[in-house]
Image (cartoon, rainbow, N blue to C red; front, side, top):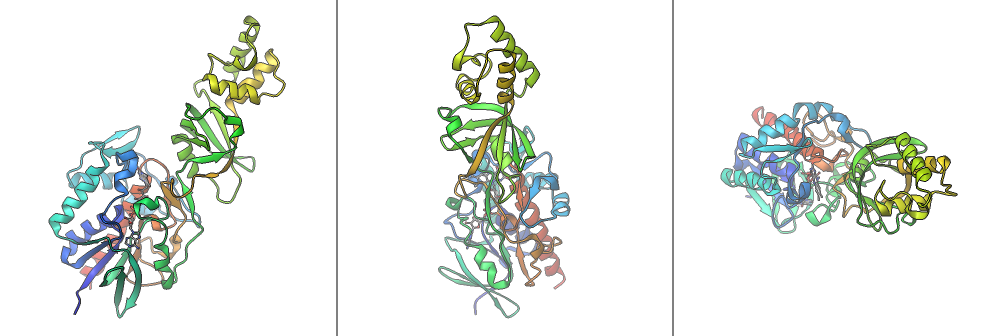
Length: 405
Ligand SMILES: Cc1cc2nc3c(=O)[nH]c(=O)nc-3n(C[C@H](O)[C@H](O)[C@H](O)COP(=O)(O)OP(=O)(O)OC[C@H]3O[C@@H](n4cnc5c(N)ncnc54)[C@H](O)[C@@H]3O)c2cc1C
């Protein structure tokens, strides 16, 4: 007769590893099974924060989270917020440091996060199966039968911690959502978020590789959606950089978006138009595509001048140029897609789980955590924070049921 675990966790990513630790510590490792389809756990963790592991942020609130169908994550984020995750990792021997609010392991190496989790699970002797993708989960009496490519497992409870569709090279290609469909769960339309943006490229020809500090605003149907100040990197397909990454979390779905780029964030429109007007007046020998040289990056200046219809070398022309420096428009044509995105917008609708314990409202003893749900966070540590907060909430539910069984 095959063993029945108390709980099986599907997905050895950030939330699955944390759950495996917390549950093994609370109810005994022999009752916990973790199944991961990659040949090792936590592959994506190593890539987070450009290999530095941005686990949370000094400022975390429900305003940092988004969804397609609506999700109220305030209670969960408040209960298991940044202090909680920092305390958790400190408890695993990982000190943390911050850079402009982003919290990293003090080593600034994402592998510290994974090493700490793996060491703890090794010590606890939690049963971990790697290289086994789950292909089917079925109700089996009061529990579940879990079928993988190479075996069958039984558990009284099952937690889905399979991530979303972003970054298939880390094991998350979106195929795991279908495991939940037989249980009556649905999936919203999915969109890549925290991702590079494709724009019309004609206006930015020749700017590839140039990085500028700018305030970038997303505009949709004439309405300003959100602005971020930070790096803007021109590419051959459009724009990238942290200002853009941040902004994509706020792109309205299925609507056209235009970017308004305000270069030179330290200078106002008035200062610029006055400066350019006096340049025109005092330096009549300066004209043509180089008039903005010395004011802004030379190539960017040329692109702006090219954009300026009927430029006259007077006060009027100076105002026109200042307006373009402060409101250079690029139409969004799409994104680089899921392979390049850090997170998935959309997923299992949040109202299909109880926010009290992340248990499915459709099937008892089935839990869903992390990116699989229709919750996506801002850039800056918010997605690992969500994976942690939802995992801790599910752990509470599982432990409570175990104690009251
Ligand atoms: C390049 C990159 C950088 C990022 N940087 C940051 C950052 O610095 N800070 C931040 O907060 N967020 C970051 N993110 C986002 C963050 O990593 C994810 O949101 C988070 O890891 C989601 O956690 P999760 O546990 O829900 O899923 P994941 O960590 O994605 O784990 C899911 C796991 O489930 C496994 N799995 C899937 N299907 C099956 C199956 N059928 N059977 C068995 N196993 C399965 C997968 O192989 C995977 O290991 C980054 C993402 C990427 C791609």
